[in-house]
Structure formats: C-alpha cells, structure tokens
Length: 272
Image 1 (cartoon, rainbow, N blue to C red):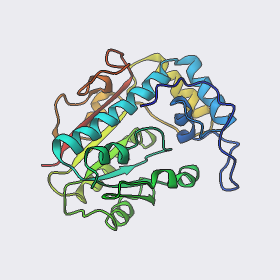
Image 2 (image 1 turned 30 degrees about the vertical axis):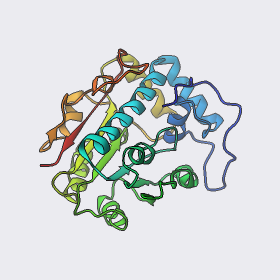
Image 3 (image 1 turned 180 degrees about the vertical axis):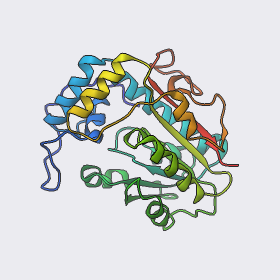
Image 4 (image 1 turned 90 degrees about the vertical axis):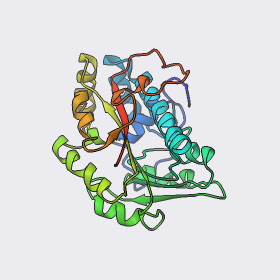
C-alpha cells in the first residue's frame, strides 16, 4: 500500500467537460488523503480543512486501505473466494481489489461498481486483469441493488459464492436505508458468500468536526456511526474472527498502522 503523505499536489488530472471541478468530490478528496494525484485544487482545499481539525485522517485513510488488502487476501487466499463485487470502489490507487485477489488467485473475477464521472474516466486503469481472470466496471448506483446484481451477473456467476465489498461507502447513506440495501444485495448471492465493510465511527470530537467541515464543503455528506451500527450490517451473517473492530485490529499483519488507533471500524461476515 502507498504510505505517501497527504500533501498538496502540483500536478493532477486534466479537467473533463463532464467533471465538475468547482465542487469537491468525495472520491477525489479520499484520493488526496491517500497521496494520489487524481484530484483538483477544490478537493485539496476541502481535504486540508478536514486535516486541520482531524490530522489523523490521512493515517485513517491508509489504515482503511490496509484493511481492504487484508480482507481480500483472506477471502481469496484462506477462504477460496474467486468472485468479488466491489461497490463504491472510488478512484484506483495502489493494490486495488482485483490486483490483490488475482495475485492470490489469478482466475479471480472482479466487478467494480461506481457512478462517479471521474471514476468512470479512470475505469481503464481498473480494467486490467490477469490473463486467467476478469476485471470489469459497471456504472450503477448503490441505491439500486437490483441493477447492480443484474449487471454483475453478466460477468459473475451469482450462483457461486461471491464477496460483496462495501468499503467506506455506507456512511454516505441514511442508516435505515443502508440497513435495507445490504440485505437486498446479499439476497442475490448464495450461501458461502461474504460481506466486507468498514466505515468511520463517531468516537472522537475530531471526527465529528471533520464530518461538519466535509458536509459544508459541498461534497456528498458522510455520517460516521457508532460501531454497533456498523455491526448491524452483519445481522444474520457469521462474523469472521475478531468480529467488527477497529480496522487496525482486524487480523493485523506488520504495517505502519498495526499499533495505531483509528476511528474506522469494519469486519467480514459469511452468509450461512
């Protein structure tokens, strides 16, 4: 994973007529915190505002990426999952889901889902695959599970176990609606499938202040939640040990964040 610092970039993508560069956008802000270059001055300004009140954000973002890597390695390596449905994938960075999965099992199939114009513009960076596997991109909205499942079924065999990845995306949705969307997606997947998710938890004043500034910037609002609510997404599933915990504590391996406390919690669960 990239450990580069979230510092202002002098370079960046050339604006597209379809992309509004006057308003900050969540995927681009996140890309900035991860040290990427796929962002614009308005995104960096919004990101810097958050860092002023919550300087831990850059570490939290990178710790979350490490969690995704460990979860995918567990699913592809230890469990033997060969199909991944990654919804709300955001902008490509380092060690995306398909790269990690196909490193463990080259025949893995990955379907990415997003509906952001800039993410779509960078889809070809995601549309790389091992010769044995498949990586495709679907333009769809998390609010429409039926379309996601229908489009994913063009690539994935949804009668076989599939890993549903909802990483850092459910905080953009009202909790009650998110509680209905997750099971609707899982209903389209068979027994032996998995859910992997994480989101920020509202355990510190810094997170709450960052939430306020993030919303005031004009980007899509994001709501940190109590860890109990994140655990609620796994109702009816068999949680993988150690359950829903701070992401640095989920099956940790040596990394810069192994002993770092972050306001991000997540877990992995199996559909019985």
